[in-house]
Length: 181
Image 1 (cartoon, rainbow, N blue to C red):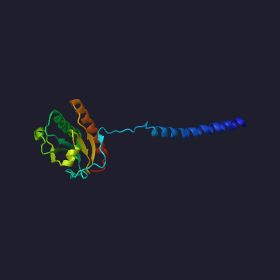
Image 2: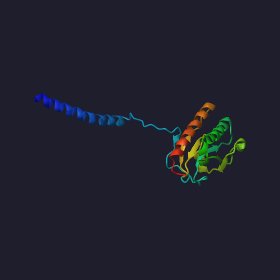
Image 3: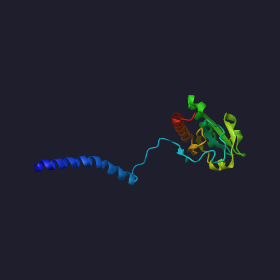
Image 4: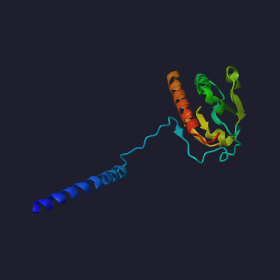
């Protein structure tokens, strides 16, 4: 009789341990910051409150995804590579390229001669957005005017190509999951 009670208590203890141990382990992992959630985006996520309205800009292409690039005062080789990657990324979207509009933002001192080899739409920029955009970064903007992802400037042809592939992957994912057309 005594061994039967021990066996029942042992089974009950193992059953409780099987259900409580995962909860305790999960609590420890989370409280010690040992778990870092996975992110599948390649670009840097921009805070949700950053949008055209908060920067005092009217959405130049409502109802379309946009790829923004601020053309610098002097367009060197790195700038030309960015423009090339922007054009190639847009072309690589295939049937989805009708939903995305590359848009070159211009300051009063932007180097317009760099655009002679490209066929991009241009838009003048206000000072608030100009101060926010720097270092030849690419920005993805959703159809509602929220700035979503940022891709900082990288140096070298291989790094630009890798970033172009990352941009395409992120855009395809965004276009697939988008409920805004």
